[in-house]
Length: 419
Image 1 (tube, rainbow, N blue to C red):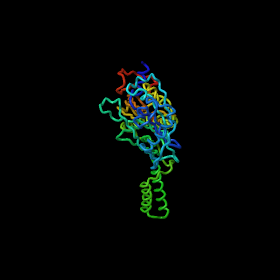
Image 2 (cartoon, rainbow, N blue to C red):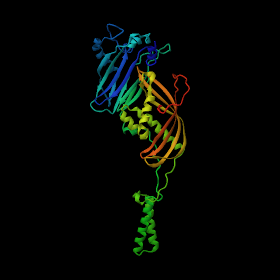
Image 3 (cartoon, rainbow, N blue to C red):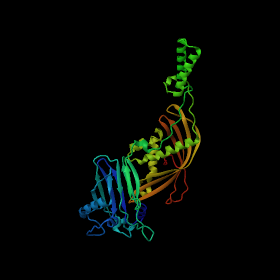
Image 4 (cartoon, helix red, strand yellow):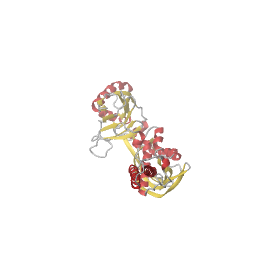
């Protein structure tokens, strides 16, 4: 059946599964859990009328059992204090029977799932939350005779940032600490552009001035010429050693900024490029735009936002939005350096020909699905008023290269293709 084949590419076919999401809210830390009945029956003994399903009327008995289990087996420490959970939004699903052939071993128990929240109240915004995930049933899909324990993929959302986690029996714990410093603290530091320097800096003008003043003062005091000259030179030497900034009006002339090396330009581009993708760690569109504006100029900002979002959508996963887990530069070649006009003034700039790979990952049913795309592109990077920014971009090639991809001859994309 076409529907079954499409669904089988999005969801595991059989065995125990658990969808796990954590979020830090203003008044509570919440663990959002959805596990199928196979996983639940491995977790605890829950007697019910029909082993293949859970009737909504039976949820009242299940709720205290979940509280006891997770309070004992999944310790949650908030700012070094252990907090007990409260179960909320407990429900069971009503799955489509057309999916049943995807679960030949576990049947309805694999398809039906229980969803609930574990709510940990907060008295104030936490600075640290530590958790240990306890449950790792055997992976029934494994080809090994001795079924290894499942690895549990999860998502963690806090302060508008969504991160991906992987719990394993050997590494079951995770500690979240509240980040400091805002958006800039999450982005790599980009070197500042070179700036024009005065031919005669202010401190040199000041040194000349104090020499004249000291010399004239000593001369008017009828000191010997040698003494007057020494006083002037000493006063000038003090200024030369201290090199005070002085008022800008004392600087004379303008000297063109010193150029940058190709290695420095490569570092600038790769830092900007990585920060561009890192901006999409944020859930909020406005915050994503603010982070993206640290790497991309205003004229390119909206186009970049839309094209990268399109690139992160996994069509074979039901249109789910993936998260960037890695950006790998393959080749970065500086084609030219010079100047471009931005805002009516000429600024330093360079062009880059780049090839890179991006890993995107979407998590559901406790599993992570990874897609890797490779791109060729050409970029123009300019030194704008608030630092280096990508001013123009042209994507020349894009190709999915992970093992699931079908072989295809890449073609030149249109102007709307993804960055």
